[in-house]
Length: 435
Image 1 (cartoon, rainbow, N blue to C red):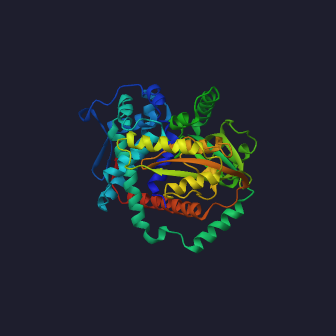
Image 2: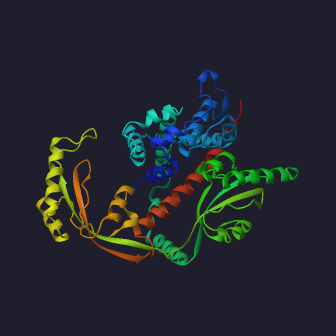
Image 3: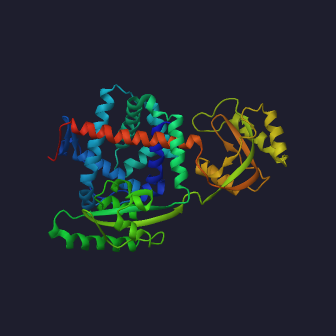
């Protein structure tokens, strides 16, 4: 089973957009923090100080991730949300330390390497990109350390209850089966509060101004991060796929009439106004998936790649395999070649659902291969593979696999425990905000 923190990391990668161009183009504006002596106190959590410099650094990391120009006005709007996030992460870190959970440096290094790999950055270059954008590298490291350690805490708390029982699996399958054929809406929101009836017109007019920005091309996640007062703000307002029954009735009524990609007018909901973007509509179980039959030849290297550089010994193995595969005209030929390399990895990995293939670059390779065509060499640290597609079938999506259902239940339990434990920590803590 995947470590839970890697699921968070995938979410971070999906939201970050930390490619070299984005980092170069979206550097935050405004002065960078000038040092601890100049910092005011943003909050105190059980005696531990969160400074305004801490808030500024996290805001800059968010700006780099979303492409937001971080002006002084934008920083001021972000400050309450980021302060709240830093308070929660300080509580998490204090609990990590109380439980003597040690986050290995290798875990942090691996997480950073995944971010670089997932965003096509050279290994070791993320630090320079962030610091060029005014983001201290320590800000990212601290966030990763807390996220990884917090997942370890949650595993400790949940213990044996983390793993679903056969009864849990059957109940989840029944729930998922009941959802087949239902319609779900992928929505994002910007919430503008109305705390006083006298502010009704001001809030509605402000919502209309925000909508005008969105409809002239401003990215929804950036505007949500700056202006929304909902908990989803720092995630770009994204609520994921929801059924109509999970939405506020007024929002549900509007969403049903919207085309994908549309931005709603202000919707009056309890506590204020919602602005909704409908990103996608799907009918559960109606989609089809592409299932591939593959054959692969894996040639191990005499010694693993070191320092990310292919040496002469590895290059010789790659060249030899490429030459051999040129003579392979069928999947049977690929199987025979793999036998010649000792079947270090099975020639037939079994049916492969294209949608589940990672990383995305490999998924794209398989999607574009004609049947009977060999791929380019796929180089890993310990060897090189070449694959051939033997057949494709389209299959209606049914229930997820048992592994996927297990991960779904585990994620839900970890998320629920995280919220409950954080609520408990808040109630037992002394927290003050402001200078």
